[in-house]
Each structure stands twice: as C-alpha cells, then as structure tokens.
Image (cartoon, rainbow, N blue to C red; front, side, top):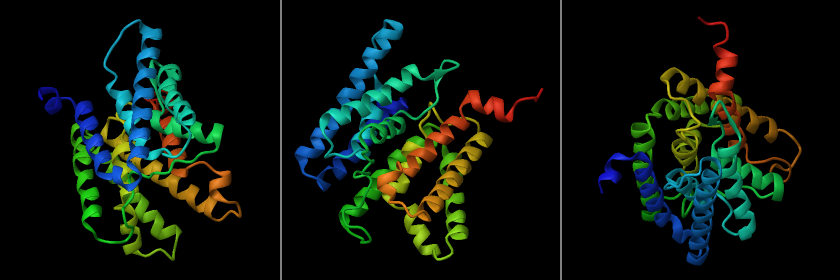
Length: 276
C-alpha cells in the first residue's frame, strides 16, 4: 500500500488495470483476457531478459508492465498471438538497444505498434479508449470518462507533464478550426474529449522517459506533436489513397517524430548549439 501511494509507476499500473477492467466488456471476455495476458507477460519477460543480457541484474519490470497494459488497450485484440509477440518484443527491444547517450528516445508502445504495421500491416485498433456507444450519454460511457481522471492525475501531477497535455490539446483545437474550415467548435470539442484523444494525450504522449521535463520544452513538444498530427491528417486526408492501406497510424507517427526531435540528443543539436 505504501508503494501505491508513493510510486507513480505502481499507481499508473493500478489505474491502467482499473481502466482495462472498465472497458474489458466491450469485447468478448476471452479476447480481452487473452490480449491483456499476452501483452503484459511478453513485455515483462522481454524486459527482464534484455536487462539481464545488458546488466546481469534482475528487477521488477514496472515500465514494461505499463507498456504491456497500453498495448493491450491499443493493439488489435484479434491479431494472432505471434504478431502481438513481435509488437511487444519490438517495443521493449528498442528501449534497450536503440539508445543514444545512454537513454532510449522512442515511446516503447508507439514503436512496437509501428513495427506491427511495418511487418504485418496491422494498425492499432484503439479498442480500449473507445465509447461503448459513440455519441451517446450512458452510464458505461460516463464510467469510461471517470476512469480517465486518475490516469490524468498521475500523468499531469505525479509525472509533472501538465504542460504537454494542455499545449497539445490547445494547438490541436486551433489548427483543426483553421485548417479544416468545415469543422465546428462543438465537433472539435467532442473530438478532444473523446476517450481516444484523452488516452493519447494523458497516456501515450507523456511517457516520462521519452517526453521533456522542463516546462518550456514540454510546451514546445506538445505544440509540435499537435502540428505534425494535424498536417499529416490534412495531407493524407487530401490524398487519393486509402489511409489504412498505405499509411501507418498518423498519431503514432506524430508521437515518434516528437520523441526524436525532442530527445536530449537531437534537441541539443537543433536548439542549443552555439549557446553558452
């Protein structure tokens, strides 16, 4: 109980698991239990093995459990188990072996999902952060929204990533209204409070090891990801190609581009070069 009160990782695991329980009834229970078991166990095992290979130490893989829980909520629950295995191993493997200056720079869950698209052509389904009945005010939908509150509390307060969430949502709204003239303010508001967008902002975007710490840098990071995402949606939406056939998930791509640009290595080169 003491660690639950003091360790943000343990808190995040608890609240992600609670959120999973809330939405697990959206699909057959066998399916939801299977995707949860596969993602968490494969991610945790991969983290333990890779850490032992690198450091010859054993530990409790809190971060890998968080990654596994996120993947269980976003990955396609009907994908074959071996494809989910590849996604989980890629997510944890890049954290260990794709490192510059001693740190990994990409959100593990996002890089795993992108790997799934590159190898198997499968897109994230985002089945977890979705309403039971879109566009309606029901008790189950209300419970989903309420279950986001503790996750947002840990992200914004415990992890101190409030400025990322606010700057991202703020610019996303402004750009949607400017770039898509037919978009109304109520429709944009409905979009940014949708479970998928909230989950993206308070869970995916603010991953503590791959998102900035300083306030000004957090603001720039949130603004940049919102800009990239909106531009990609506009460009791809105006192409004559089928999005799901030719393009990966644009929100995942935007997040990874933001991870790269605002990693310590790239940020120091691009923005701090020449400063005393």
